[in-house]
Image 1 (cartoon, helix red, strand yellow):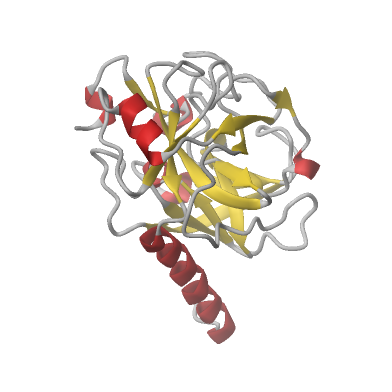
Image 2 (cartoon, rainbow, N blue to C red):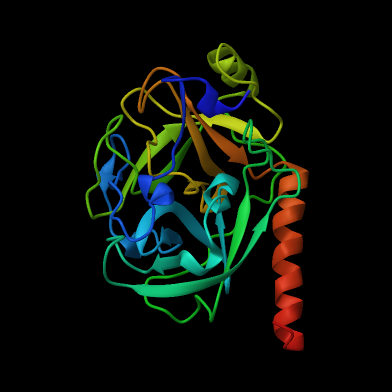
Length: 267
């Protein structure tokens, strides 16, 4: 069942900017629940995916011209309206703005249940050589370190239905075992192999954090997908699992194909 068919229960953590119409300014929503304000120099892989220059989702640098985000962040927007801002603590100013020219959504992405919630975004030019922008390696392991704490960053709301602040925030979140994840969420959603849970009470992701990176030991292991009930509540948030082979293979193949195109000068 689609998360948005469960009123007040499951929320796609997408900024209202994604639903902006024409040139009207969306109500911004953006910061991590709990945690602290951080500087982009400590999170140089963090990006802001924007629609008409308004923040809609987080993203991360995974190749010289590819960013990784959630599949649902790439649905419903015209590529010509999308840009990415990198290298800035603020999602509204500073850093470097890149024009988006192509989207690669996982072939098994399901817009109903957010299974395989993965998208790669290609920009014109390159992320390399720009101040405070760097690649984050993705998980090379087939397992998620259950019980450990990863770090999630973004501009998502600090509380349910909250408004944004300008600066990036980050917080530590506990990574749940598959059994714990299913037990905590079974009343609301079906947790698939492409998903896992992480979060703490009063410390988690919120609206506006979609597509952002969850990092463990300097590798990205997850993509922010959706929350259940409320931001920072007792039910953990759900992330896309980068350790799943079909997710890893899609990311690796997309990066490799794009590098071949660059070397051949075919786009």
